[in-house]
Length: 145
Image (cartoon, rainbow, N blue to C red; front, side, top):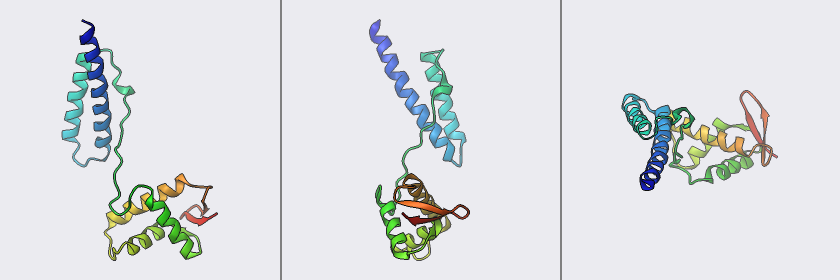
């Protein structure tokens, strides 16, 4: 029976990955009922294979959501260009609106602006004190080093 044990380990690993991915989807879903039902089914299957499995140890994983306007890593360099051209500290929202205007989007909707502000702010926090530094906290303005 060693083959059955190996197969169940592989199945547990795959089901744990699925459980983590569904947990990530549950965080941002508007209609949570179908995802919750799927999570319960996966949890039940895991517990069938290994009743002692600790489901709380599985952390939710969110997939990378692609920005439709920029390729990966391109947003930060474009935001730096906006800061260089402005010559003064700007907030993430000001930078995001200028980036959207540069991309030819004259009247972006609220969701698009919010998504861009998040992308700019996250990339700036990742590079904080290396290429850029925050000048003020509320609202947080950024300037080049």
